Every structure is written in C-alpha cells, then in structure tokens.
Length: 137
Image (tube, rainbow, N blue to C red; front, top):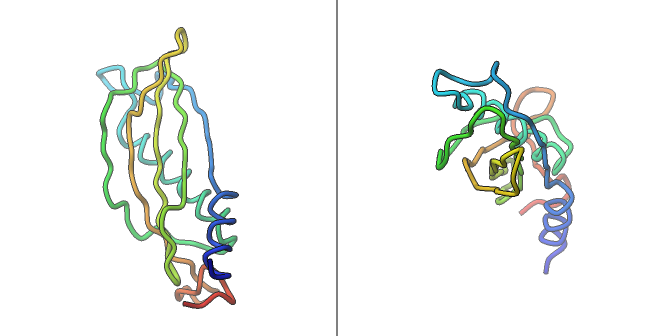
C-alpha cells in the first residue's frame, strides 16, 4: 500500500459521519411524509461535513450523481444519515449518503434513500487544489 493509499484509508475511516434527525410536521408534505427537498438538503449537508472532515479544506458541491428514493419517510420517524467517502481524486472526492428510517415505536430500520455527491477542493482563488496536499498522483 502506498503512502497516499494509506492516508486515504485513514482519512476515510475518520470522516464517516452520522447525523440523526426526527421527522416532524414542518418537514412533511401533503402525504405526511418527508419532503424530498428537505431530504436532499440534509443529505447535501451530511455529505459536505463528511468531505470536509476528510480533507479539512474549503469545498464546493459540484454534483449530486444519483438519488434513489426507495421508501417514504413518514412523519414521526427517526432518520439516520450516514456519509462515507467512496472515491478520492486529485482535487475531487465523492461521498455516498444513506438515509435510514426508523419507527419511534419499534426496532424496524430500513434504507429509505441513497445518493452520491461530488465535491472539489478550492483555494483562496476558488480554483481547484489537491484534496491531499503533498500526496500528488
């Protein structure tokens, strides 16, 4: 394993992010389920935190690659968002975010949403910079 690969593995493990939220009426739609836009905002925030924890540099979101809404999230649920870095380039990285839904009254847990977000690290001039300074490809 190269020095860069070792550093990526170490940073990836340390940057996994878990955020837990309760789904209350202000975040739900006319179906009494979580607004898709609210879910996306939460996912973007968790992916940003994960990416920032990985490289500790200013970042910009450049894309959300694919978002799969597999299960509705009803009001009164607990959701856990989990962010993980899944790919590291020279100036960019990708983060997968899973959203798991749990009932407040039972032990059931289900993967409700999954998506991938891409980020680019930027310097003071807003131009791309290496996500791992000193570890060029």
